[in-house]
Length: 284
Image 1 (cartoon, rainbow, N blue to C red):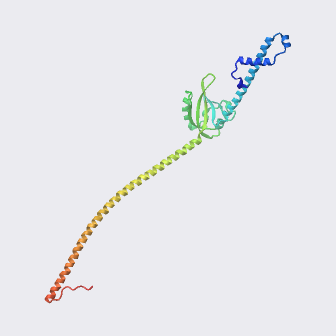
Image 2 (cartoon, rainbow, N blue to C red; image 1 turned 90 degrees about the horizontal axis):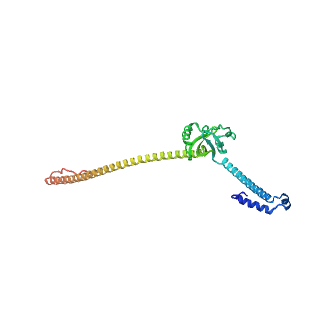
Image 3 (cartoon, one colour; image 1 turned 45 degrees about the vertical axis):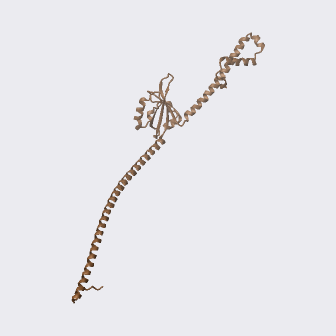
């Protein structure tokens, strides 16, 4: 109904009211008795206009209430924590997710005593103070990572996004804060970093081992070349010595043969002169 009546002017409403009056005209007796036909007609038109306007307003209010309820549910049950942080560090509003993250109860917000730094881990307070100095100096979206703690002493790493909110006077005195628990992501990043460092150490170790093996292989190659060169020299020396031995052996064989021939000649001369032979062949 509200969708159909959106954008209607006063003339449109009067035309609708006129149609209603035409369809339900007052009795002639009443008009004659009152003598105010025109006035009654105008009053009826005005009354019907008011009724139509009232119906439209009721429909709009119902739609606004439904939208408000829907957005309230979206706000309260969003997987991201939302809270409103004022310039004095007070928390004036928080959705259900943010309250669970910080361990808050339903009535805690209404006390007006909740201050955001109370939920920042002690070792991260300096980070918050440095970030807080510039938080209310710019309307641009700002982000930071903090370690937050709950009232039950549990803690988690959070990514916080801050967006400026103006009050009714148009002054920038509050921020809408979106809180996301990134503890698991941080844990995975730390594991990946440890894995990366482990791989780098392993690669460095293997590289060092490879370089050492390469140096050792190069040394072995040089030593092997030296050994081969030395072996070649030794082989050449042995070849030369062997050649010399063969030469001397051939000379000895020749000398031995010559001695045998000379002994034969001496024996033959002894036989000719009638003397006994001097060289007797040794028994085999």
